[in-house]
Structure formats: structure tokens, C-alpha cells
Image 1 (cartoon, rainbow, N blue to C red):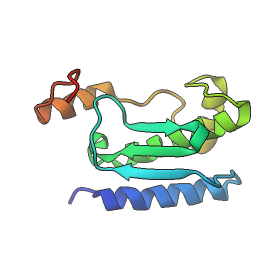
Image 2 (image 1 turned 180 degrees about the horizontal axis):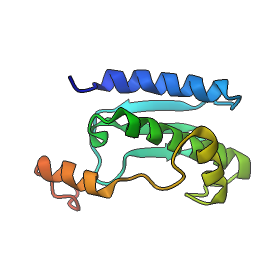
Image 3 (image 1 turned 90 degrees about the horizontal axis):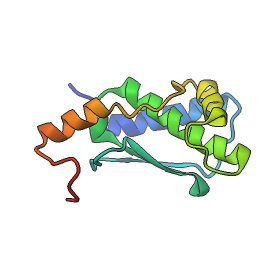
Length: 128
């Protein structure tokens, strides 16, 4: 049986506990798991709001990939807290990603995003 959005939400809680157990302050960080699909993004992070939305459908039931995305996005928030500005995938973000156990690179898996949209019959670049 494939993992569900509820499994994904439970994983968010476990990963947040793990990161806090490493001694990193995640107060005010809010993570939502959405069943909505997006055209190009696996997640959206608003660093200045300490808010992350993870788009479950594009992870294709892959909990390992989903966990990496959680850690990746939390690294954006912690990097922003450190330097005071959004840094995208620069050196401060890479250092945070490695500390949190995420692969220190963009993980958008564009090929899987495209495959998802092709399977659903969506035109990727249209505003629907």
C-alpha cells in the first residue's frame, strides 16, 4: 500500500522532532502538507514567515525523498535566520542542509514533476 498524505504529515512531525533534538530552534516554524499539485515546485518556503508548504502529490509516495525535502526547506529557514536574507542555494544554505541531513543541492527532480503532469494530462506551462 502506498504512503498516504497522513503518513507524510506524521513524517513531518518526526523530522521536526529529530531536528529539534539536534539542538536547532524551530519555534514558530509551521509546515503544512498539501494534497494540491503544483506545476514546478515540490515545496514553497516563506522564510520571513517561517512557513513551509510541501506538495505531497509530486513526491509520488516516496517518503525518503519527502524527508529530504522537509530537511531541505527547513535549511532555507535556518539559513535565512542566520544571515537575515533569503539565500536560495548558497553557501550558508548548503551548510545548513548538510547539518540537517539533506542533500545540499536543489532537489526538484524536474523529470518526475514532468512525468506527474504528463500522467495527469496537464499542460505544464499553462495557467490552469
